Length: 209
Image (tube, rainbow, N blue to C red):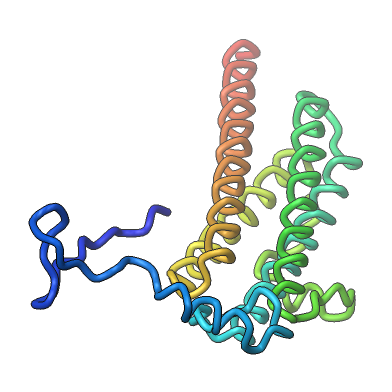
């Protein structure tokens, strides 16, 4: 999702760029930046410019972490249980998605620690913290559908988080935007598999008739 960019009009004590010598500097005064950097140095990456509610962001990220972990487990099961026609190509996709979800989980956990939080890997309550469900599926088509549903849940979940965080935590927002783009690719891959398999079944049904 691309944030809307609002053009800031010059204030009464400013002149448009290139029309006069009087302009308010874009950046905070350098001396002030240096003073703020020295203050609360133990906070690490969290500076005075961080405007989000840090604990809320950490809680949201732990929910996202749980969602990614559940997705990894579901994709792993589907990879090993996939069987039947077209299963080889689909299983490879399951394995690739699991690998990418693991990367997302690692990114999220790292960001939580950067915010001075603790990533929650406790298996107890994992399914409750996750936005997506762990659905084993009873057939290859069921597995693809359940994974597609989970990806659609993740897409809406990440979109809501991005809108909530906005410009208050730019680093977290950008990370979530990158993850969101991959989840959208996953959903598109799975939808394509469903469409191809549906077409294949219809073609074979007509031939049999």
